Length: 320
Image 1 (tube, rainbow, N blue to C red):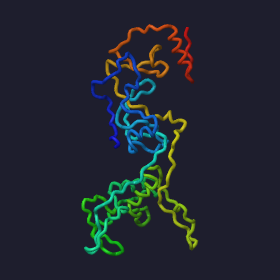
Image 2: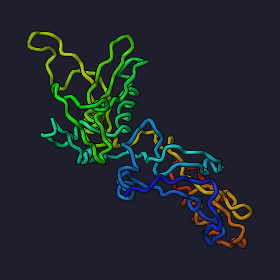
Image 3: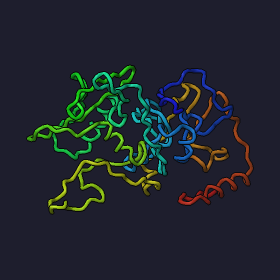
Image 4: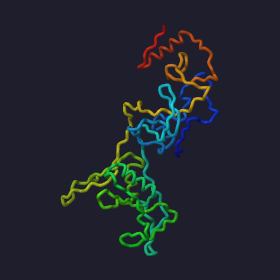
């Protein structure tokens, strides 16, 4: 079961356990778990905590939203995140759409009865969501409306001209049709909202795709009379992005951090002789555990400097 998105807070409640050392990594300030891969995030949190990787959005390797502190270039600043989902490259196997059964029935003339067809009923929130998705895609002109309409709300439900009485019992789903009105044209029905929800999940529930108006896949360009076959609204599958773009690290969302403990913690550059030297340039100093002046041999300094200079892309340090 996926947990609810963590709502980050700029200052967690005290007391805060801090490492019992004079200085420590800024990772100790993290208030979110960072997942190295999409597979690791899914294994820990489930599919609802992630999205199919969107390269137009920054890489986000943690789950949650809210206000927190962020460390950039040695400075801490506050920022509010609104999107809780993890955004990491990788392949996701999306599950099929689960359509629960129903106990609701349709009765004709008080005699013949059958269960409601579950491929035609859905909840209003789902009907509105798929309508909004279609409108947001831009496949219809500006000013177009797409409104869910309960087809059985005005008395007996007509099937082939015959009145059927619907008995919903505890069922919350209804026969929502999508009424399409394009500016300058007469209103038409796009059919059952549930049918479009199922079309949207044809390649897996949540799989990436887009709405398009195009000829039906595999259909000939004309019918038997030589007339063009009209384009139709359809859900088109999009490939998943499994490799991050080259500039992805420049678009990485920094890890949320708690506030520094006032009067105790400060940020500063890592010192020669620190275990963190050569790994990160900014560390947290703990005034409650102030270090005595480090007494290290010249050989230790030379070893640390050699390790630093061996890193690719750094400016070499010379000991004078």
